[in-house]
Image 1 (cartoon, rainbow, N blue to C red):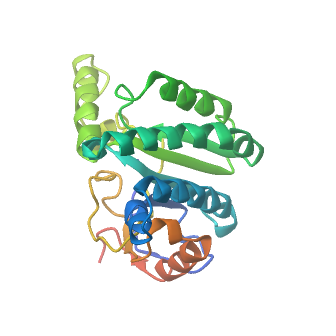
Image 2: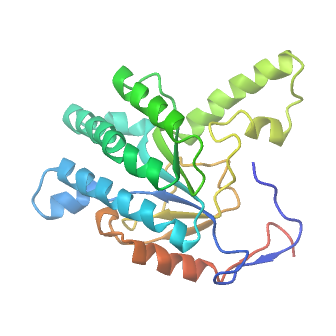
Length: 244
């Protein structure tokens, strides 16, 4: 977990305090399609195209880490058709973007429980993680079958085992080291698209001191220009981390 500075930090455009780690709850794909009279999966496919554009824009916007919420532990409640379609979209994205991410210096990782995912998808995920492990221009983390409470429960189990083995004492840092995001910096900024104003079980531990931005724009309509505007706006905020 990233260290919390003792002093207040002022965010200024282009300055040291500009958000470097952005996390996005990509909401509104299904609604975008439904509003146009199209199947929900059309919206998800359009949303995947938008991910590619935002990923490519991040380095030029000063973003070093991008974490996106692709599929939650609650999303299994959706129709079988939609779930299977989403899993197919994830697999195609990995296959089609592997070469580009390798060439563009993107390191791709996944968080969330993998045991429920199809074995072929798990293999694709492990393969691209290994292939891009040496990249550092942008760190892309994709949350699939992810839920913050589920992550904390799994981390607590790991931590208990480490305490029993005498490898940890139960500090906040010990717990952070047992999370799916161990070794990742905490997000500076969390964005949710589609106008909803809830965090939906996304990074509850890691985002405890993050700035939040809720935009009415549906994810398929969210462009790099929208991201740039939000980064400029949130760069004006002061982050005191509890200091006066």
